[in-house]
Length: 345
Image (cartoon, rainbow, N blue to C red; front, side):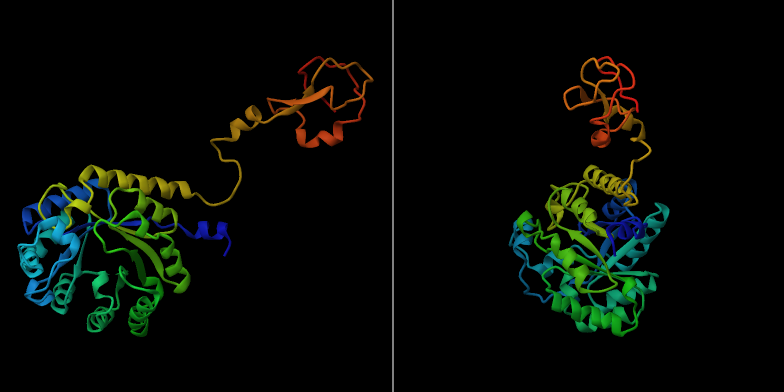
């Protein structure tokens, strides 16, 4: 496929997911505020996480280093997650809040019962977290639903991605309903570990799937770069306040940053254009102003031959183009010219 053909095919907007995650700190009121913030920023969906600590981690599971840095070592991962759970009722109320604010509700399930809960709620898009990419029973259950899948691939290599995709494809899900998100699970991700080119490697390795990027860097430039490289989905954590206690706040965007990121991505979408290289409507008027014409470098008498010494190229470009220079040199002037006068043939 040519570059121009690829641009012509790119007609869909980037699907932007504002990842609320657990940044609600277990508070339904805070979660509702996050829905409003996400909707105001102009994202397509706001995403939470559906889990129970008792079915997600063992009682003595340790925290990741980034979690320890963010919330200390006094509590176990189990104790930390237990405080961040959303109830079944919370999910229903957040779904209603999303409908009121005209934004799509998504949530990442972390066990089989979470899949059941979300399916009962009518969820049609399934975001699979990086940690579940090697969880075969989990993958099979989501595959059995036959719906759209968004697969994060932090910590995974191409073989592990292929194994997960085989579960979906073997179940009859078409490749065009699958988006694989390149991702790094370190919070925040160091710039030297972002490796945006891996997104292109995923695209080249798996025919027919879409690619996107789930970002855990600080700032907004990396998601924008991912869109420029072809990401069809962008997922980015956000928070009401980076100084709040909790594991993910510090690596998240605050409301104003989220809005700026969304606008930047929408600008990139517009800037892609149709890929046809030709003068645009806005610049057509500049052609005659900034291009040049062949003019007299000095006074030229009738009958005098045009030479490299008595001709030059100057703006504006309303006369003979300098690209015809070789056609003009050596001809005889049929009229007299004063300095800077356009040559006429």
